[in-house]
Length: 406
Ligand SMILES: *Cc1c(COP(=O)(O)O)cnc(C)c1O
Image 1 (cartoon, rainbow, N blue to C red):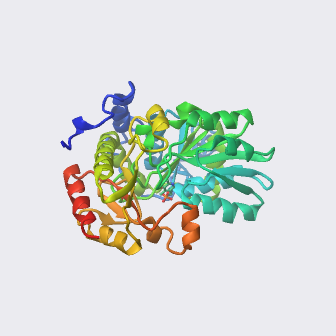
Image 2 (image 1 turned 180 degrees about the horizontal axis):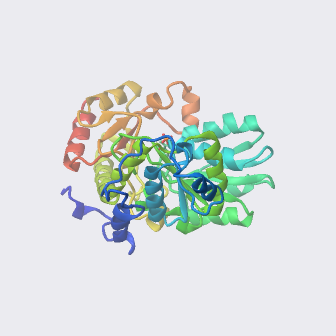
Image 3 (image 1 turned 90 degrees about the vertical axis):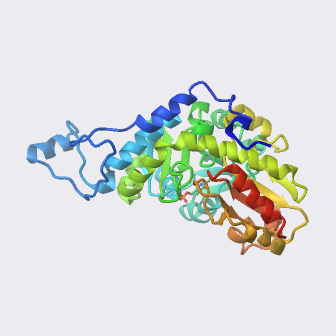
């Protein structure tokens, strides 16, 4: 078996506009400042000055608006906002200090008491908890439906429903949403849609082009790509994002200049990185699926994945996340496999250049009962691997050795 980019199943699957993503990633949003820096300097001011009172009046009248105060934004976050909007095919993008910051601004900035949201049950656990534990305090109900069940989704809609929320692909089961069906359900009822596309990134799917209203990213993951920053983004139309921008102006939470500057550097290589994450993910998933010590592999690029057909239709690559079950292993045996890895680091995050591994039963769901874990399909022998950008033969060799250590 050859572990090279040429063996990737979907090199040819590349949509026509894909090459320009690399150019957009480097050039969109960039500006040459006063000193014509190639990379924008990191803004380090909390406020800006006006040359005279007329400039204040011109700013107030929006004749020539300028930067005023850093809670409203900064040069570095605006560069990445424009870049991400261009990568998403969105009219506009807002940057936040984290993915959860973006999500909470959307929900709290647009919903009111009496509204309802419907959320798919495999969405990011903190988003589901935010809806069930916090939105409810403000009189906003949240209803969970099985991920990818479009009849259940439609059945959960009431005249009070304002927003349908789903992640795609989901974590750790990597279920891919049929965006066409998801959007069709929402449109029939005049409801807005939010897709958390953190795992896919705009390299693999562009939900705005499928008619989704809001696209959320934890830019902390693949977009930044080096595990050295926290940021979040929300893409959509200017009109829809205005309310959320206003909310952010009040509550704070804009992406800091330091994080935005690092994110900008990360974004410049993001299409190339993503191509290699896709390739490594596919090859690692194929290795695991063939290995007799593995019970099951979840990877949307494998024929065996329940949503493989949807993934092939809607995505141009399947990412670097691979989830698998160790055959006949209990919790302790699974821990031994994880502990035996030398290259893969045990860590909660995903999407960076380093390969990272974790056992969801103990890292995300330690305090749940076995029954609760069974209900959300998180068995003791499940391992989630975030394939980094090391040579894929080394990632595979690490797993091969670790699987022998049970
Ligand atoms: C990490 C993550 C989030 C939350 O983003 P933060 O940047 O950690 O706030 C949301 N959705 C998904 C799918 C994530 O992986």
